[in-house]
Amino acid sequence: MTKAPIAVHNATRGTTLVSDGRVANWFWPRLRGLIGRAPLTPGQGLVIVPCHSIHTHFMGFAIDVVYVNRAQEVVGIDAAIAPWHFGGHYRGTRYVVELPPGTAQATSTQVGDSLCVEGCRT
Image 1 (cartoon, rainbow, N blue to C red):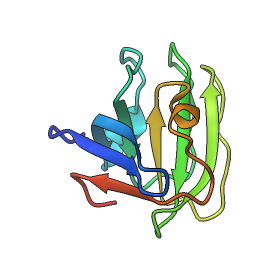
Image 2: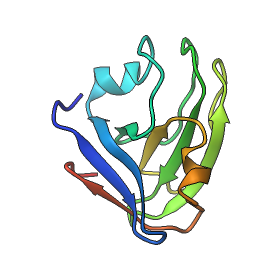
Image 3: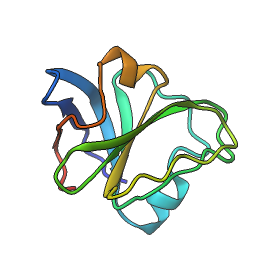
């Protein structure tokens, strides 16, 4: 997992999804994800790249998940996925952004929006 914080902005809506995030971009951090971690607070998030689908097994809290393609467009959103569930499968997903529940709605993020990730290469 990267040590330097990253940010994720919704360029279409002019909102910020993540202001203090991390990137999981190699095998072990992607495998672990948020398992065993404290619940995300507003502004926090995890970008998992590459990633095509997720699960919340062994997690103790719900998350929003935004699925993004290579063109940085949102191709799917799962709101407030509870622990012990699988996320959706959205065609063309390159990476996901895991967020505190309610973040997608609070930032008006919708399928088709363009995201900008600062601080990492997706």
